[in-house]
Length: 120
Image 1 (cartoon, rainbow, N blue to C red):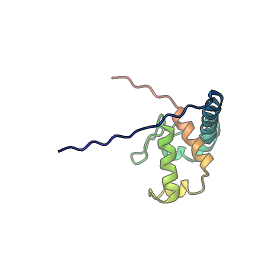
Image 2: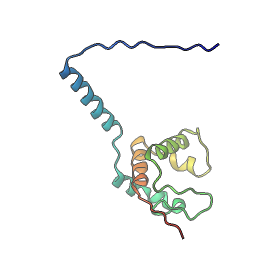
Image 3: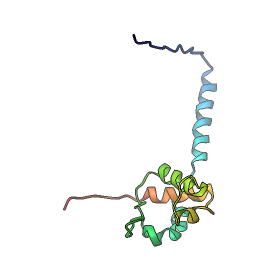
């Protein structure tokens, strides 16, 4: 015997202007919270180039490519290294002093690098 659950939603009419204001406020607030500056990230990325390459393409077997990775993924990983949730001998030290803005900017820089792939 299978049980199913249903949820009833109540729709409450609102003033159109209020709805528009709320939507605009949410959109602007989300944008401000996730403001990223790839130019500032590129300037900060010099410290990353030794292992990850100047354009985020690593030449080392134990350092991943960063170019083209999603910004949200890169930021999440850097924050995990910074907090100690994720550990690596080098990355834990490198990420420790980074601010949230610096992390977001680095993530924006590496995410902004476009890659192309072709068959041999």
